[in-house]
Image 1 (cartoon, rainbow, N blue to C red):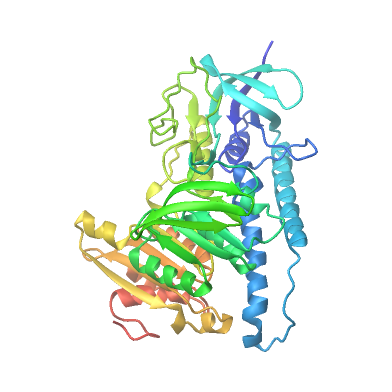
Image 2 (image 1 turned 45 degrees about the horizontal axis):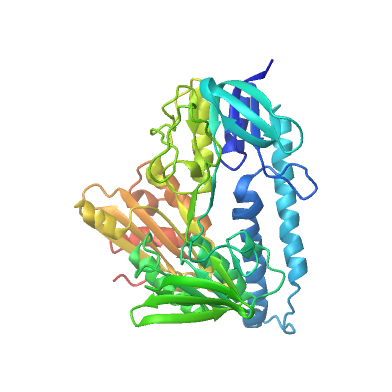
Length: 475
């Protein structure tokens, strides 16, 4: 006889493990299946985010930023140090230790919430049956009243640049280099490409980023993208726009990359090539033919606004469904699915999901860009405040960038906030909260912000919308 659960979650990334915990908090009997494992065979819950994405990349971003600052900035603070020496092995060991701590922490959370963590592969069959294939042992048939699919995503591989796990690598491979490449090529100037390019550039690599699109950071507000591009250029990142890669071949000397741009056919030879052109939903062997769950043309699991599939009692959340592939978006969808299963009212406000790029300076935004508001036909006004006028930013020696706010002319509602500058990923949360409650720029203007703080830039930008900035000459 198969074991039965109230909820079976397939996938233990930020969407899956959070869904499992919330379901257990409702008093439901829950199992969570995931195939990630450590080298010793133990479980490594946390999905791509904790094992090969968000967490290890941020660990290297932090370490590489400190290395860069020690060599280029500490002297401005009156801190005299010898030329810093890189110990990449220790840096990588630190990163791996953080990953182990956090994945182990999730295993502990599942246990504390009396969730059965199953290491292996889960496949949805008809009638909410789940075929569980453990990493070690025999297959087992499980039954559930409800199933939440949270299988995540995987890097997109180009036919013209196949991964060889040595010289041509995906984002995971780019986190595992045991030496700094002298010349590094990155295909794709999106979030992942810019973050990984920044890491290795700070550590000494000569980095060239090839972006097929003509616009830099097309998804961001143009003012923010322009400022970010200027800062990356100052840092030495060679970002080539309109560069379409046509071939990449590993050779004895490295990787020869051919690409086309406005000047015709070009070639580039690098020691390592990182392909970071996006991710695709991972649904390999996830659904039996008779499961009833359908995929769209792009391979995403079809769901409605509440993450319900077409099969009663089956939900799908996170990177395997429509919307931005962001860990926090997946987590909130996991919470929503679990709450709906428990009979509660729940929703995700997709209009106020923040995006962050953890480069230096950081880039963050929420809501609509100026162009999107313009295209909608709604009348609007904008305000901006540069970090160069921030006392706190000056004290930190991090004055690059700005905060930009877009609001409606008629009722002053905040429609979008865009930041490039220090701690942008933290500052954007104030904007998210404000927009969640349909705040106006006047609401932000009348909110007292601590001085001196980076958050004052948000306050000043809101004042600037009405040409009333106090610490900067309005335009």
